Length: 247
Image (cartoon, rainbow, N blue to C red; front, side, top):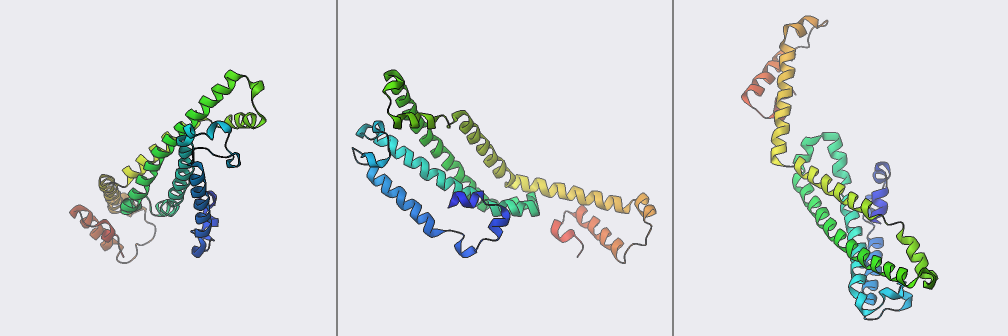
């Protein structure tokens, strides 16, 4: 259910029934299947009905089986937290970077969870891929003619795994997390306030310039001159940016 929510467009999410947004029944069913598999795969010997290759059913592969289930669990949790970022992304698109600073505490928690899961996900993936590559080498040593049809399909499936691309995606997500955290710091908030203050100073200076006054073809609205003078005084005095704006 979390993958479906992440893949949905903003319009689809907006039309979603809030009472069913969490899809608790579907999520519970998914985790129940995972727990049943974990219980069954923790045995020393796993049966053919598990869907695993014979090479991964023995007691020596118990850790690899556990790592595979950890991989699935962590991937699902990662998608859950990434999907949870959507409302913050929409708000930041509307309100700008300053909104990111105001939402810093909430965003920081989500990003920390994502960073933690990224580390766990990569560790599980490397463990599973190491075991897979080891078995692939064993099959190659025996000769492909001795491989069963199930092993052949398994080897064909491995061609769809691009570890270089996965590493690049890991780095890209980590970089995005760092960028988001940097955008929510107090230093960034101070920087944004300073930029806003300079922008207001430029507006006041331009408004009060003789060139602007000369180019105004229409008479200025009543009270506008006084408002701009007050704004200039507030900027010079270092007042609250929100209260500076004329009501």
